Image (cartoon, rainbow, N blue to C red; front, side, top):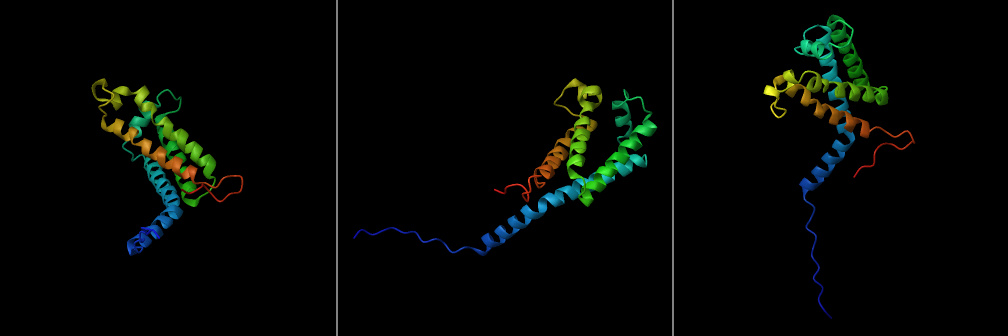
Length: 165
């Protein structure tokens, strides 16, 4: 009778069990943490605009100079919008319309790159960002976070959420 080479499975190490528990916890909680983080960031940014204490007030006003509303109204109004988005994200209400509005808002921040390229790029070089340009381009991360929150919403067909890998 031929011998069968059977490999023994190594005993499961305690670290693997801890890792599995941690990954399960992260899968359950990370979308909520991301939603709360986005909410707090937009509450903060919005409050700064309403209080006229934001360092980007002039940038917003210059970029949206084509809007027939004075900057003294436009910037605080944008702040109120951001506060509303932040509150709704934190309290987990009306997420679908809030996330759509947030994506539109974040996409709008890229107008600076088109409307005010002299403000966003050093010497016209699109690879050399100014501080304002970096401020705008980092919004790609906020867009990705918003998409992650949207992707983890329960579907309207009654399932409990996205399929986990």
